[in-house]
Length: 203
Image (cartoon, rainbow, N blue to C red; front, side, top):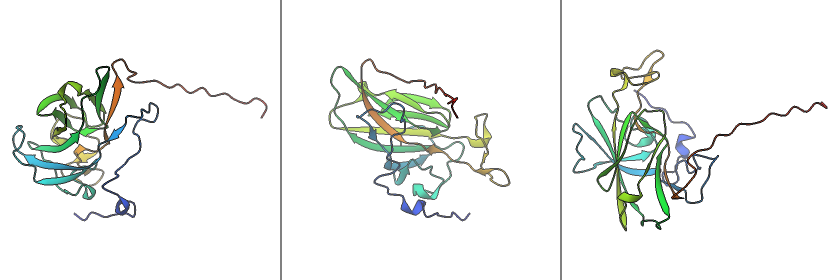
């Protein structure tokens, strides 16, 4: 299958991938974007692999050209991401949150080899408080992904392992921004905004 590049894909800077804040309605100055190059591996078993022999550009799925992988994650396989984060434990009155814009389809996140959060649903964001898993200096972040695509009951849209017609190539992995932020012990988790439309009767 031929993969075409656009003028926009040729402008992608792997050192500054999608740097914009992913939640503009609730911005915090402690924002740390984790997009960019991660180590990557495929395996047949759920155990963390001994080596990560590939490199992937997050947040592009491994099936697309921009990821640098161009390989389909198949049913029964596991896709692994790994990177280290130089991060000190925060003050006692602070917490560190790790956010994923989306991970297709089922994800488990490990911080320093300890499971921090599991999530199922390729279209929804999820987060984890990772403060208690952190250590001084470098911290290892690993994400394990499974995607059964159209062979299971999970929501998949028009994705198919055999694309054609109205169906397109199945995508997997981290396909939205990954980021972190520091918050107080008591913090606002989300806000709901209801716009009010005022009609000018003079016009």
